[in-house]
Length: 156
Image (cartoon, rainbow, N blue to C red; front, top):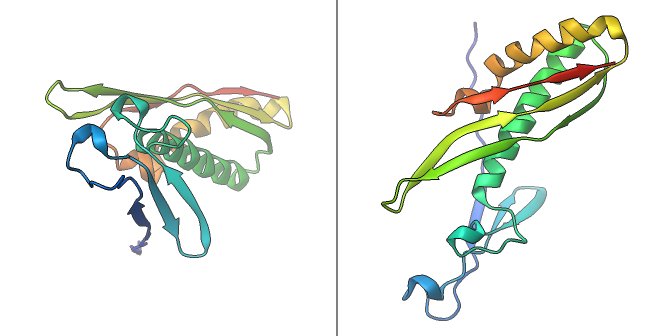
């Protein structure tokens, strides 16, 4: 088995200096922009609970989205290799983060709820089973120190 390293680069620039930097906790903005070479950037902020802009993506949302997307892409690849024809896929993922009362916190869990439609009713059972394998192979889920669960619904 050959191991390969993959490097992912992002440039993050804080955009929240309102003239006085971080002189006061309530005085600075939480806005930032993340850019990637040759790709569209992302405007982000903190969660509104932490004085962020609710109209912008926050890191917690991006983590849940990354887990959902990684599971989906892994799952679709497994289905294609097994010659199972997925014709629709959506997920309503949800993460729970708990503050520790000392200024920190951590994710407690993420629940993925994929809804998959396959072309043929005979593909429902094997398509349902591939979710467990997709979870095992998902790079992002394997990197987390909290449970990532999935409750898939597969129909034809």
